[in-house]
Length: 356
Image 1 (spheres, rainbow, N blue to C red):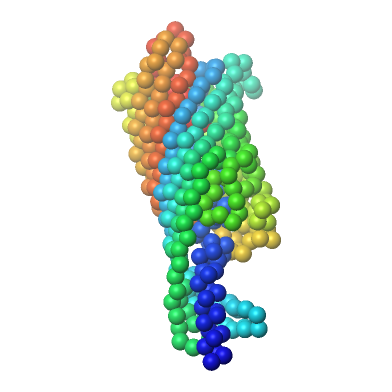
Image 2: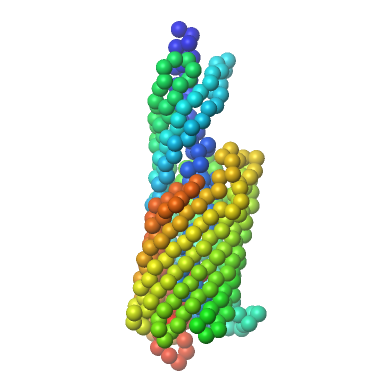
């Protein structure tokens, strides 16, 4: 009787803790940076990333949607203790994560007319607001060492709406004919809604520094374009969880052809790879280096607005693959930007303001 009672108590404890325990202990959960969520959103840079823009104020509005999922089967052996009851547990934990994020971003920017180090200097701010929803289903199968094996399951859903972390950025661009170069530095202001005990968050809970450089080949005569931007992110410790993510590298790419002076067609892609192990007293998952790749189509269209301003629409989407320690799926970006047109000429596709 005592053995049956002990086994019943242990099963009840496992049922209660199953989903909440998987959120804290398994590597696929999008739980702050510990779950493969990075400060840098792959795909933020795109085509024409390094081309110069006209001095003055510009504004971009962006809609970003991502749907990702992840699953894993984690074999483990651990000690289960409750009061005076101690037993060996061996088994398998299978869990599935589904997450959807919808963000609207306002991106005001200002480009200085005076050159800095021979380059065109721009400051901008990403102001994101939106919704994040995540759910996890978990099944635990194993043996408590007190009798026959068992299978239990549970689920958890979480949703949050509000502001995400702000993203200030400073960049420099140089132009030499069809060759364009840029460098940038960015960070995040941890004002987004964040709770270390939640499954869904809009902030990452810690500070970062991100920097890199890029190149764009653009020939207005042929309409051909290729861009690539490589950056690196240093993550400070998350003081809420005593967890520090490793250094991240990200490469955003785009290639396109202006089939007319206004219509642009092309492809986009990205590579995201963590370069060093996660650390910190709160790290319970080990090195946990994350990776994901994405590729997809894009279409752009330049809209003449007035003698002094032009608009630019861009729609691009990515299908992700080769993910490791990070949920994957698909995402789409819709951007509309308004920027000053080149003086003395009609708006042309060679100088649209692209989100940098």
